[in-house]
Amino acid sequence: MSEAQSITGEQSIARELTAFQNNILVILAKEPMYGLAIKRELEDYYGTEVNHGRLYPNLDELVDLGLVEKSELDKRTNQYSLTDDGYDAVLDGIQWSLSKVVTGDDRADEISDIVENSY
Image: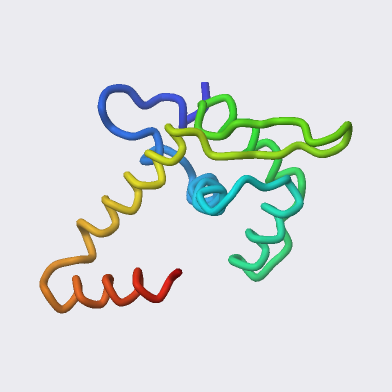
């Protein structure tokens, strides 16, 4: 059993995932993607190469945890999409982060500005 699988109770599984795994979930919150598109998004974020040996085992674990769904686009290409539980995990992470960052009206306004300018 992985470290991420050890959580129980009401607490979200996202709280036990690695930052890399959470970043995959956030990327998939935008839209379903195939592995190489996820890899490119991660490389843009990290500013360095993400190797297949890191990406695909993490995707497989997220699938095993029920946070990501894997489907076959063709014989060589899989598409990954966020499940409802995966989306809930992303929201839980955002909510937890905001509960630590937003400590007053000024910070709440800054966060509102970020949200308004994000889409």
